[in-house]
Image 1 (cartoon, rainbow, N blue to C red):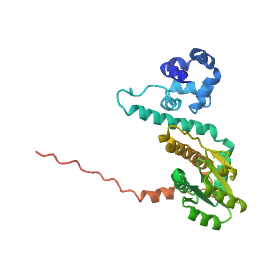
Image 2 (cartoon, rainbow, N blue to C red):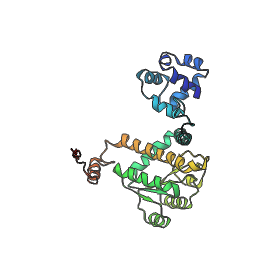
Image 3 (cartoon, rainbow, N blue to C red):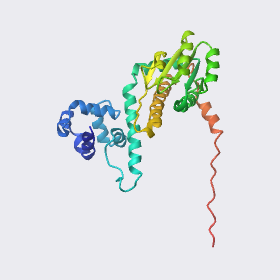
Length: 282
């Protein structure tokens, strides 16, 4: 697929006029590979790719997603350029993997459960804790009632006193976090809904959830484990938030008007004042 993307980048004008069969023959790949390449770029099909090429849009993003295209600085020019490229490639790969792992039906079910809940309890420990707090902020911005928990003792108290209609969303890469497993078990016995974001669909956390959203995970190199896994988890949170914003924004009984939130946040910012230019010395 790398050869396909590079040929398109080098021959954009010619590619615009080719059929999918002609492009496949020209680049030595199958039509299926061309179609998969289009889907990788976020396009519906080959027709959209031709339109994008003709209009000159989306090429930079497509190049990044494909991991090919115009080469960056020669690694010999700077010792950090190779490190920078590897980090970007690893995290780009995580996003592409996540798109293939998350079932659309599960994403829809998760969105519906979140909207139906009267309180969303977000749970995450270790490297998943920042993801839970990011989701907490995003849900508040959408007008949803939510809270985030990363302390096991507080979580135990919340689980014991939670009211009917609440929802627990647990985030665990391994799916083996005991506190989330125990919370899901207790919540289940009380008829509360549970959503899991995990990289292990066969884990105890996944088994105790009503809906499972699978995040991508990469174990090598070690230095990129945390950030790449977190990016995958954050992308799933982003999918949910965008789905909520687009599908329920017009219903005031579900989501609040976010204009009031924007106004309150604006009060926290220091106003920008025009600074007079410095006086020139004679």
